[in-house]
Length: 75
Image (cartoon, rainbow, N blue to C red; front, side, top):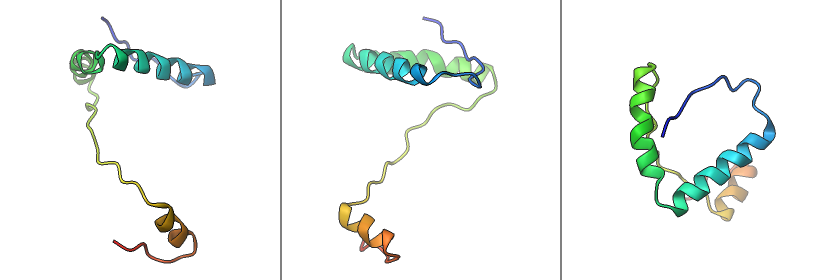
């Protein structure tokens, strides 16, 4: 499998759905990690940083309401 980085300045809106469907299929086949294990060295070779998982914080609906009214969410 070869992954190539290309100029995305002309990316069409439909490509995002294509990528999403591709990732969904990879996930279904349990191949996401294998792909990225091969992709990371190519990024490093080109001088790019690797992808890392980050913590995804989610606000509750109550917290979002408080934020919208200028209040501080309760921890």
